[in-house]
Image 1 (tube, rainbow, N blue to C red):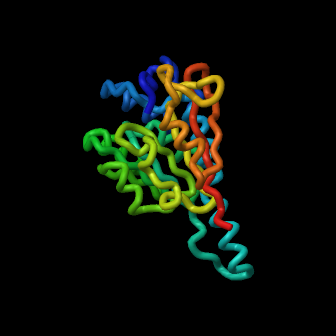
Image 2: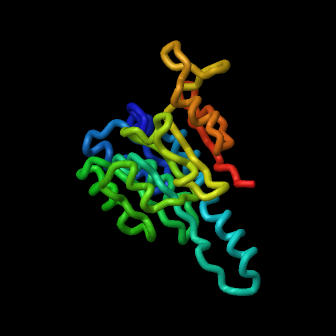
Length: 221
């Protein structure tokens, strides 16, 4: 979620995936301001397109000439809100990929679940972000929203991601130079992900006031 992210879509919703436009309208109707911004949504849409590729390749290598199992991918998200970010993910994901999103606030979770009701394999759970561990591992995981999932020392990428899986941690403000700072001090949360020993991570600028960390879980030797 981004502060005032819903307003970032402007008055016209033309050119958006239909599911995303529906989610933005639902957020507006209920006065929810903190939706996934368009810049972040386009990133999620692109990354969702690769979900499941790692499992498909590994399954094919193990069972050449036979029917493979366990090849479908899984996308996870914390902080559903009214489902704008989840809609971007669903619009970009290949057929057969499962989507699991968790939202602590029951009314928002119910609204997002209704929005995604016709999307095969999509589930919105009313729960804290730690519920994501029960459904791990993920090919793509988006740590969004409130709670402590994005903070340093909390979410464990080695438990949550398949080897080679992608992690997105959003809603940072671009910081020139090194180390990255926030309010004039080193940004410990950002440094945690950029320097995590299990990840290869990079900060991706999305707008003048917005960046995200995109990381890949390392393969074990």
